[in-house]
Image: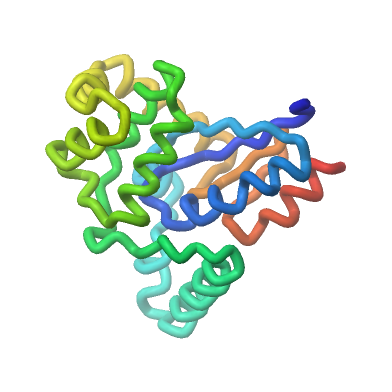
Length: 201
């Protein structure tokens, strides 16, 4: 029985969002919580808040960047995420696949879509800002790739992604992954213990 809800503000462009999601099933099982994924555009969040990706933010602080990478490797080792690899095309422009997430949400298949595209991005290393690559991958993984991409260009779909992003910024979001338990906000994969405590509280 689901008694509480964990909301994830999500964009495929964040490797830490992928890593966090790999830790969520057991956390949700332990807490009895349900997960709601809210697709947003990380680039839009950065632009609105003045935040930057770590590789840009810490470009002049190599020790800080090295530590960020160390923490990532520790997290990967702890969970045994042997399939994870940094996408060779990183950073990938996620606009099309995030609009696709809005379509998938509208069609009731968001969880499956997120699982599949996460795999394409962070396990298979595909260039997921190339529409031909996207369509081929989706069609090979249970979706109608061309139809989904066609819907992703609809003004209503585009507007919903913008609205999701603007609402997230208004709630205080400055990066991804960001989580909410009610009104309580948590940023980053290193807050999962605090999230679990809050869900249990």
